[in-house]
Structures are given as structure tokens and as C-alpha cells.
Length: 288
Image 1 (tube, rainbow, N blue to C red):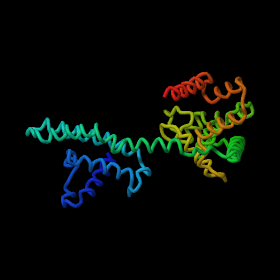
Image 2: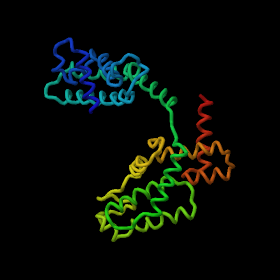
Image 3: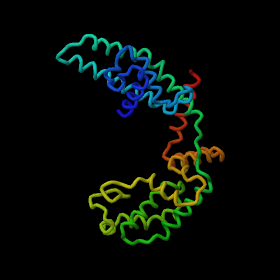
Image 4: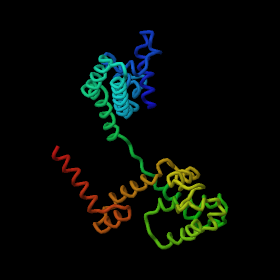
């Protein structure tokens, strides 16, 4: 309901000339005569200092506010209906306001928001990691895991957990040497004595534990390690962007069917399924 609070602030600004705006609550604004002001206030929440409708900064706020306003209106209606004093005018106002929401809110607010969202989706730049950054990261992970100290201190255990998570996220090649490089650290972090000395809760069954009953987040581990290295664009290295990086390279390499099938399986995809989705997508475009 935080957005609803911001909406109320904007509503009060829009009726500031009445002199009673400070005493007006959302209850007072849920009336047919305030509907246009409600729509304008919803746009104000999404477009601070509005001067160009194509520059909505938070279009999703418009979509969320629609449901907040509907809930508040239905709450007001139910409160009025169940009240000891039947107020026909308030009840009719709520019904009329809901009718206006279904008829005009889409045209005045949500249609514009959807248009901006779709436009941004097609024009958004999606950066992939720089090849040199991937190389530096991989060398650093291999070096750290090959030479890590296996002492059972709390700091060392979580240090190794962090590097193991990143290593498992980053490599897409399954060479025996790479697997051997992480075997000892893996055996180390599952050792019950080591976990106890490091202060891990004995009921924590996660492979990559935190200090309580949960697991360390691999995305945070990757982010921390990348920030420690001298990379060109550390913010571009995520588990998702690295998959996109691999997919982009395969388009350039012009892989054969059996090679593509191997790659898809390695990335957790099935080539038949992927092809089926692509064909279905373009068939739908042609039909439209």
C-alpha cells in the first residue's frame, strides 16, 4: 500500500486550492467526481514532473495502482453496505466509481503504461560480459580453489563456499581437471567437524550453508568476487548474462545439430523443445 500512500499525496496536491486537502482521505476521493483527478494522480506517481507522456519513469506503478484503487473502492463499498447506517449515496458512488475504473482507467492510464513498457522492452540494451572479464574471473576462481587453505575457521569455510558457488555458476565445460580442482573444497565444506567448528548450525542441510539455517546466495557470491577483481564491466557478469554470452557465441560459431544438442543439454535446455518454442513464436507472429 506504499503506492496508495503516494497516490494520496498526489491527490491532495491536485486539490490544494480547496483548502481542505489536508483533511481529505482516500475515502473522500473515491467518488465519481474525483475520478479524473484519481487518473491524473496515478500518472503523477509514475511520471514525476510530468511533461512528456513517453517518458514514464515507473510505468509499472500505474498498473499496480489500478489494483490498489480497486481494492480500496471495494473495501469502502463493503464497509458502507455492512454499516448500521445505510448510505445509499455512498454505495452508489462506489458502484459508479468501479464502473468508471473498468471503462476509462485503461484508456487514461494503463494503456499508456503498457505502451511504454513494451517500447522499453524492445529498445533496452542487454549487455553481455566482456570476454577478458570472463577469462580473468575463471583464472581467479581456479587459482583460489586450487590453493585454498583447508582450515576449519568460520571465515575460511564461507570463503570457500563463495568461490565454489561462483565456479559452478561460471563453467560450462566439464573437463576432468576442472572437476578435480573443486573436489577437495567440496569434501571440505560437507565435513561435519569442519562445519561444527565454523559455527554452522548442525540442522543446516544445505551444501552451501550460511551461519544459520539457510544457504548462501550464489548471486551475491558472484557479485562480491567480481567486485574484488579489476574487470571492465563487473556488473555485467551474472549467471543469466553468462548464459546469454554462451548463446551469443554459438550463433557466430554456426554449430552442427549434434553440437547444438550437446550445448542445449549443458545449459539445461532441449534442442527439440527450444526449436518448438521458436517455431510457435514465429507462427503466432505470421497469424497476426
